[in-house]
Image (cartoon, rainbow, N blue to C red; front, side, top):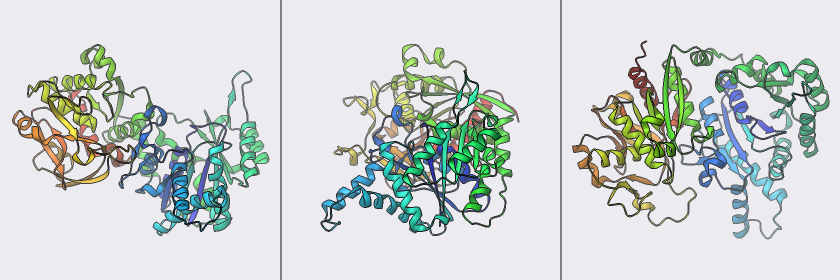
Length: 540
């Protein structure tokens, strides 16, 4: 096994995850088996209990692990299917160390940061290595910024690990910012020099430095030479990573221009043929040069945050490229819909999507948006909470059930269309206690869902929720025209609903956005975009 460790310097939110994912995509195009993971220094055990305003979306893996959104980039850019072992936080590390100490695992020794905490971090690297014997390169991104107190133990663990496995088997890549002082009209390399100096104090010497710049020209030969000299790397190992012009999927192509993948395989002593990036280039070309244009309204409560619905936006991009269509996403704040009206706020769009979420804030606005889509034959797609919202709206306005609601929003509602799962009733702990991860479902033939899934009778999708469709209302709602087109194979829980009399109205209890790929869009997203194109008169 070879190892790549990716650190960040100067500021946070540099795009280390995208840089790592882009490199992973290039290495896979060379025929290298890549596995990616993220080490996060924060003390939360996982981001499952963190607000989207703090952390962005919570990405869910097949095994139910709630993790950092960067793991979404890893799975979209590479073929690896990740697990709970691919995301490690300080919270997990300290929790394990304390439990071991309480159980006497350290045989009475004084438990210290070094070696016990750093050993636990290295244990995760060893564990992933052992579980993936077919993997050629394990890539690990370290969250945070070099110099942060909370990240120091992770960096020390990496220094020790590199010594243990042999420095020839490890490549350190440091992602940094080259700020431009507009008044002076020049780019400054000093912050990068200081950031690398911090790494060298710890005992880590980066092999490559990836410089985040607005434009590639900002890393000219003079700056490249200066960084190489002061940071003790070769000039060709100082690589610009500029802001993408159209889409994040240009990242691998930008790094390929500077032969970063070639430099990595040479550093690790691997004799690998050149990559074939034809398919990736074709995908990017479809995004940059679309034939059609549609406008999709995403109605949510965290709408001002780009990262809150990151996987949904990426899945829309995948589906749009599949149909050679530029999708203009109109972000609609559901609370604004409550204050005005769906017609006034949403206006003329080609499709309406209601994403997941928690809590009652903005839910009435989502219900109004759903009614607007249903009554005006606008293509509609609901995800997780969006499916529950669609059920409530149908119950109120078609079935005539007064005060129909979810017990999440109104515990005393007369008609609990959505209710807490029985096994969730007595759970008090919030972390990792929902219905999480992949679940197999039965898809009924003759339905829109069956058609979109290419007539598959069973599917497997990822979940993250506590509340379910109340089966006590199933018969009434089906009599009134709602169709249940998929249920979970084990419990018979409602997974997909649709309205056959509507041109395209479908909603899923699971999160299809977690399984969409650039060259393999999720079938529900692909169908939704196609229906939106038809609604707006787009012709092939």
